[in-house]
Image (cartoon, rainbow, N blue to C red; front, side, top):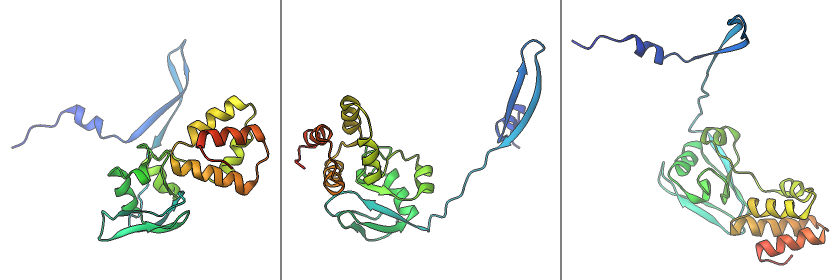
Length: 185
């Protein structure tokens, strides 16, 4: 014999949100209620996704989900299973999780569905990203953005390499990047 179910237990299992619009405060009436169901997307854990190394040196890690290791050449990319990437992130691999939420990671997860699943907040540092930063007006705002966006050694070297490659010509901004990174362009 089991315990009888209480009324509160059945209310907790409802997955439908009721959203109420246009509440008339004077008459305390609801004019347009509607329901929205919450759906959860299922990810295929066996699917291979791309991860990118932003560093100028080879990085790698031992696999958790299977036997072996993953090595990524400098500024290269490789495809591994989504399950492996998620396992590495959840087990605190600093190369993938960076500061804990994906920011300042040396390995970028190049799969939006996986990043959304992990609530990954990191950005891929590329030419477009740096160009947007160089479009910032005012050296103070530019300097603060550079200091917040480029923290690790890999990010700083990548910034300097992109400045060299794109041949940015704003002396004050380039000099600010050199000072922050400790590397001359």
